Each structure stands twice: as C-alpha cells, then as structure tokens.
Figure 1: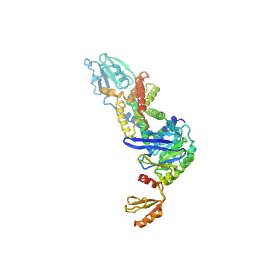
Figure 2: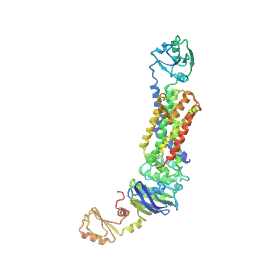
Figure 3: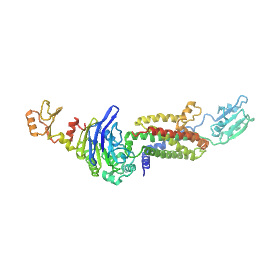
Figure 4: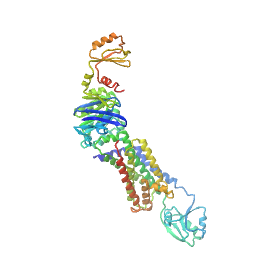
Length: 287
Length: 331
C-alpha cells in the first residue's frame, strides 16, 4: 500500500500536510503521534472513508476504489455497535455484508470471543469490545488491516491480550497499519514506524534504525539539575530536568561529578522509542 | 442470508428487544383511543339537534321553540345535511321550502320528534333516512393510528439514521461493501413491517372493545395504510439524509409533526376552519391518509372515491424519495 503527498484540509485547518508512505506487503506499520497529529485523518483517507484534499492512495499500484472495500478490514477508533443484539448476531450481520466471509468459528478462535458470544453489545467491557471490533475487521480475510488506536483506554493486561491477537493475524501474512499512543506497543508489534506531528511525517524507518540513527550509547537523566549554563555532551535542559545523550558514558559521568550538580535521582538507560519521540516532537506521547 | 435481509433482521430485532419503545408504540395509541372515547361520550346539553332549511317565517313551529332542542340553520346542498342524519350527528331536518322533514328511525329520537311535530307538521311529508350512528371514537380512530404511524416512521427511520451517523454505526457500515441503497431500503423495509404490524395490532385490539363502524373494505383500508406508511417513512428519510445532530433532528421533526397533527384533522374536523388551513393541510401526508381511511370506514368509499388521496400519497412518496436520495451522505 502506498500514499503520495496526501493532504487534507478541514476548513482552514490543515490536518494532514503532504504525507508519503509506502507499506510493503506483509508487514505491520505503526503510525505514531500525539493527539491531533493527523493519524486518524491519514488512516481514514487510506481506508477510503475520507476523500483527500490532494494526493493519491494506491493499493497494489492501483488507485483505491469501491472494490478495495472487499479487501480491507477496519477497526475504527470510536464505533457504536447496533444496540440490543448480541456479539454473535453482530458477527452474523457483518458476515452477510461480505462476499466470502470467514466462518464464525474461525473468528471466535482468533479473537477469543467464545465466552462473550451471547452477550448484548452494550454489556461488553473495553477489552471485550475491542476484541469484538477486531473480529468484525477480520471477517473479509483482509489483505490490508487498519487498526486505529485499538488499545487506547485498555488496562495493561487487556492490552497484552490484544497484542497476542494481533500477532496471530500477523502470522497470516496480513499487512497491518496500526496507529497508537503506546511506544511499547509499537516496539513489540511493528516492523516499521512513522512518527507524525502537526500533519507532517517526521521520521519513517524500522524501530531499530530509528534508535540507532538518533541515539548513540546511553541516555543520562538528572531530574533536579537546576542549572542551564552547563555544557556537557548533548545536554538538553527541560525546565529543571537535564537529559544527556552520550556515546562516552565514562567521560560524561566524570564531567557530571566534577560539575558540582546535585546528582540525586540520576538514571542511566538505553534510549527507547519513548525517548526518541520526546526528542522529535518535544512532547510526551500521551500528554 | 443476503445483505438486505440481514440488515432488516438486525434492525427489527433491535426494535422488538427495545421493550420501552415497543410498549410505547403499542400502548400510546390505545390509551388515546380509550381516553377519547370516554371524553366525548358524555351527554349533550341539548336533547335534540334539529336542522332547518328554507324560509321558516311563514310557519312558526313550536318544535323550534323547545328549550331542549338545538336549532341549526343550513343552506346549500340538502344531501350533505341528510348524510348527517344518517350518521346520527343530527336528529331531524325540516325543509320548509319543499315541505319535507327527515328522520332516522334507527335513532331513538325519531319517534319522540315525530310525535312532538305531528300536529304542526301535518302539511309536511316525512322522508325516512337510515344509517347507524357514527360515534366520535369511530371518527377519531384513523386519526390516532395515523398519528402513531407518523411518529413511528419519522423517528424510527429518520431519527435513527441520524443517530447512526453521529455514533459511527453508519461509518462502520460505509467501510463494508454495502451500498447506501441496500442499507437505506433495508432500514425502510424493517420499519415498514414494524409500523404496519403495530397499526394492525392497535386497530384490531381496540376494535374488540369498540366495534368501530366499518362500511368499506378492510383490504382497501390495509392498502391505504401501507401506502401511507411508505409516504411517511420517505418523508422521514429527508431528515436522515444529512443531519448529524440528534437534537436538531428531533427539534425539526417535532416542529413539523405537531402542526401536522393539529392541522391534519386528527382530533377535530377541518370543516369550517379558515380556507388557508384547509389548503395547508393538503400538503401533509397525514391528511390524505386520514381522509382516505375515514372515507373507507365511515362512508364505505371504494378505490375510485379515494383515488385523489391515493395519487397524492404516491406522488409524495416518489418526490420525498428523490429528494432524500439526492441529499444523502454517509458522513
């Protein structure tokens, strides 16, 4: 799947500002960004739900059309389900909308739905609901699966369970596009990552390469530095909080000890995507 | 199961399992019918209603001086007045110019009036009229069922689609290979079945107790009802085409349904209301249903007599559907 110079305006607001991404077949691509970065707008243009202001969306080198709808599975961020009908009836309803649907048993097996099949849609918990929505998304055996923040609002256990379901679907060689707030989720599930902010794509690469390109060595954090006149390595001061990226930990530590700073609470760690995100967008992902 | 029947089935189950709405749809019209039948069954202030036509000055008749009689002067077509006697809305008509008086022997008042008038009306000849009485409840029942149909059609299709649009059900459906045409016609079909069955249930149920006057064909009444439901659903679809806010939709629908209920002759006859009101009422689908249904039930009208109403409803349905489909957007 490929998009070229995709743009979308809502009135005067430029929600998506010229994005190009190519997603090779069979990978899981993660689109990351803070709230309002334009992730949902981008994914909905790729799904064919929103019409782009400019730019093109291609699937297997053809512009997407109505036929594309038979090949994709979509899990929206917010979807109300028809009321007063059960999980099983909802699955049957949506199965009947597709030409060659998966069997109920197969969906139940992949999404672990057996315990909630006869439950009314309105009585599902957050995690059960997401499992059910994933079930709806995989009905057509999609060649391309879109998951828009599928684990937002779930507790850690439910999120881990959901990742297992996605791993099962990945094993079927389905191409997946996932948007998320959670860096750990992206690191575990995604083969390639795009980081978005203010409607633009800041970086696109595999998680390993992104980290290797932006960080050398270790990340030293000092929560109560209290001074900004210091020049040590790539030190960045955010308020009271000093962050130093260094490829020579030994030298940095000696400099810090000699600087007379308060080293209470100092931490040294290997940088992860969360740190990269902070570096690129200047904001915390979930702020 | 194909797309169409699957959507019809899901929507119908949603309605049937929503006990509150189901109960309301059945109970509300029954309560109204029962309420009105009691409210208007009370005694009149007058014992008799006597109509007079022509010049009364030449022959003073003491009948007309009776305190217990309400005297109504008529001019115009005498057959229309005779029709009122047939329906027991009037007890007697005296036509002074033609030296005739009319009585309905199926009404208990006929004998008394004949006795009272026997001396003074000796120069007049009597004409017998027959027909059993039409109570207010016979007259009001098509109105109440029609009103219930209107609410159920407008809110059951128009409003629900707006809600689907707002909460994302419509978006979820849009992401499947279903065409808007299949989705909308399935919604219509489900509501059509629901409204037709509830209307039949309400009519049959209340008929057990009230034994409504029925001078025409039940089949024709059913056809008129089915057509009216289609017209009303199509009307509701216009609201469903684009609106996104449930509050706005419900406001607009109420803004339109209430005048329709008042000015379509649900509770009182439009006879004698200002001409503009009668003209305005012709634009409401409900008016045509009520007129046609009353004509069939009370006057025993056939297809030919109610053809104007049928044609207007067919035309309205077509127009509403064209407008709604031209305006429709998933988002």
